[in-house]
Image (tube, rainbow, N blue to C red):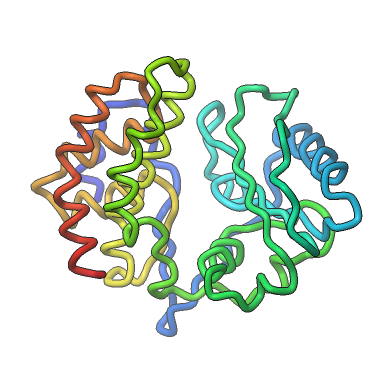
Length: 264
């Protein structure tokens, strides 16, 4: 992997994260831990907002992703929350941090006890067990079985044909630059993680961090190495230039669709 590191030109794309190898039974070690101290004011604020919104129906709030993995990048990483409730509620309106107003947050809502058995929640159960951390309330993360590598770990590749077509429908020309950059980042993360998903069962390893996913994809598809590196750079340092985004997508879409068709 090291032979390619010198070819990465964007200094924002640092070698953060690693492939986490599973044992002979496919079991992965848990990676989740309490977030760094600089996240505490933001999390305190968001927890308070969600408690006010859901009231007595709120059971627990967990964090997943790079923040509890401690692979987050200041000013780049978003915050992924999972709220556990006793019944469905409308999506909370305008719950944003005033401590960090530009922070992108994504919140998933899961209804208990259905969450523990629902087939559609298999990936979320895995993701929380692998790199989740309970922030408030009942420790749902600790109740989950240890994460096990398998087809359920594939989050993006199976739907590649859809999101490759759909991303431009989200792009409104009159949106501001921040919105366009958010779409770019969302898209490029999916591209890199999907390409890694084609290899993870063969490698018997897992990661959600962009750098190790990029390295594994570049090793697997050397003819597409330059485009893969470009996509990873845009996942970390997104742009609002649609023509450049389309160029990277165009260079990798055939490969993604080919891999999707081969596996699904």
